[in-house]
Length: 106
Image (cartoon, rainbow, N blue to C red; front, side, top):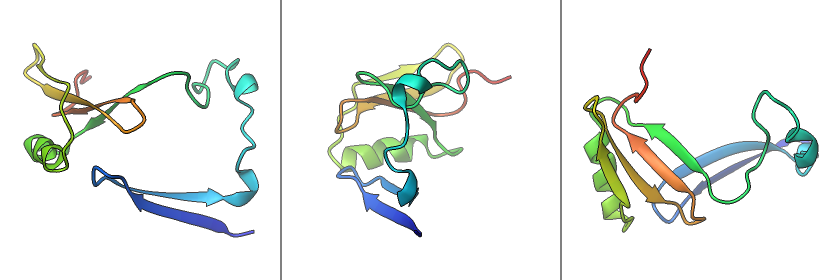
């Protein structure tokens, strides 16, 4: 069976593309996965927080893109390091963050 490619755009204008092997859909054992130490288990319970780094110089453009699509920013933080990050919810209620650059550089 061939891979299926899924491409779609969310209501906020974010494009996603994934390749999905139809033979493996639904084969994840969440209970068994949750007992492992590494990597983190598959799936999540409740809402999650995920952060994305904006490409250099594109942080403000991302905020504009969100505003143009009617996405309300929940908060924007200017961290002590001078890095800014903004927070908003996706349609599923997950908290998403776009950071201006790495908040914890080496």
